[in-house]
Image (cartoon, rainbow, N blue to C red; front, top):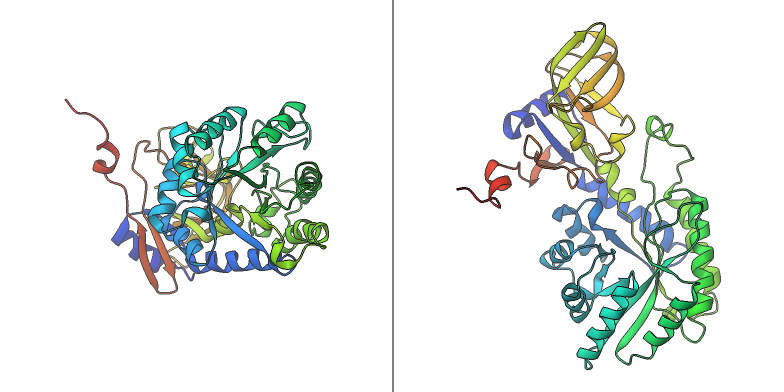
Amino acid sequence: MELNWNVLNKLNEDFGDSFYLLDSNKFVKNYDEFLGEFQKIYPNTVIAYSYKTNYLPHLCSIVNKKGGFAEVVSKMEYDLAIKIGVIPSNIIVNGPLKTKEHLEYFLLKGSIVNVDSYRELDLIREIANSNPGKILSVGIRCNFEMGSTVSRFGFDVRDAEFIEKFKELKKIDNLYIKGIHCHFPDRNLDSYSKRVDNLINILDLLFKENIPEFVDIGGGYFGKVNDFLAKQFNCNVPSYSDYASIIASRFKEYFKNIPENRKPKLILEPGTALVADTMKFIAKIVEIKNIRGKKIAMTTGSKFNMGLFGLSINLPINVYSEFKNGKFINNVDISGYTCIEADYLFKNYCGILNIGDYIAFDNVGSYSFVFKPPFICPNVPIIDYNGDKFKIVKHKETFEDIFKTYMFE
């Protein structure tokens, strides 16, 4: 994606003075590379793309066309997958809150539901008994010790109550327990090594007599980051290959005596790893102040546009200026347009900066526009920009978009 001030200014004239730029070609490359590293070692690997991370229909459609699955955590995301054309059996439903109505809908459609609680188990038993002619497919979300923090999701699979419930489920004729699932927030390699160890132990515990259809190790993987961003994390940032060598190699060894055509699917649920570096947020400098020696540059964007990462660290930025010889400024804080005092997009920037310049904030593809509330201003458009070609993949929101659900007297 070759950018300069003239290109950004033209986009400003057409679409407004702040917007997201998407590089969908980079998304495809990330998808192919991530999946490829795992399939080199364990061929029966599939990606279930995390919709919650970035549910842009354009990207979700790319995943579907490439044979990937949809990983969803709500009825809204499920409906999006169906609208895009994902077949129900390629949709994995996670999340802690599933109503009986929604559970029945997902299960009767033929999707895999990873069960999260005893409440869900009881509801699924009722649904199975009410639909004796329909085969229902579920997985078990596993909760095990991963450190000092106790996760609130899934089942403590070594608890005696769970073992008894699992035995009861296996007796339901039309309920098929297809596999096991886990997900934890830690991104480091040691975390994934522990996940694999625990999942293998759980396979030995729960699947002694038969082979599961899948093992789902969840998401949470780092995406590609440059040195500026990597230095702000408190760990070494693993590559796609690093994750594959830890995860796929272990399952290859564990399932080595099973014929290739009967090996379980290894399901991965990446979001950030595929999409974070495929989007930029563009904002324009409209004001530069000096308040008692503190320099502050205000933009047409907000920290609410930046995503989760941008709330705690400085994202990589590039400044695009109309002028060849701009003014160098030390330690300027770059702020947003909102009335929130703490609305800063970047702290202590040192470099050339002028009113009218554009700033491109990198690595905003994950948990960004999906997190943006309709606070003060509607959200900005998303433009898929590859080379000299661009197309709108999400329009700028309008007053009507925001207020059509409200009642006016």
